[in-house]
Image 1: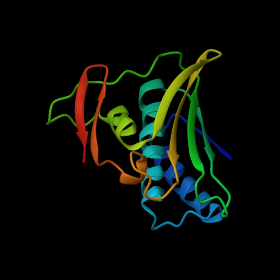
Image 2 (image 1 turned 180 degrees about the vertical axis):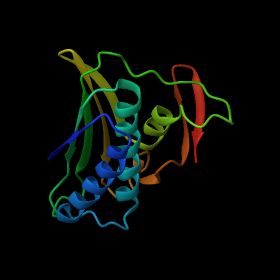
Image 3 (image 1 turned 30 degrees about the vertical axis):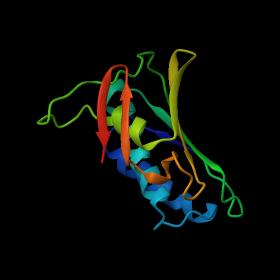
Length: 153
């Protein structure tokens, strides 16, 4: 499943609505913590693509079937900008700059790769309920990224 994203901030809301509509058929209930975490990750990655690249992007979502309770959910945003994603160190009053820290704190795994003239940023959430150390804790715990320490709460 994929959605073409225009370089317009209004696309972030459209991407969230699109992702929510895909959850129902996958067996992930809208009230599951995984669903809200996934929507937050969609919002962060699409916002980064729209705000920081000024290029069209493609949102891809890989959802497990309804019978797969221990499956992995994968989210990808591919854009045409060759600029690498760079986490920022921001002070408490900044209104932005926390997106990659949120992705790192909420996803079980994430990364990026060059793709032609652009790049693909991806993250994964393990659906296994209650597995220790996975995103099922949804933000409880500390993490570090290249020397920047933060706590996702």
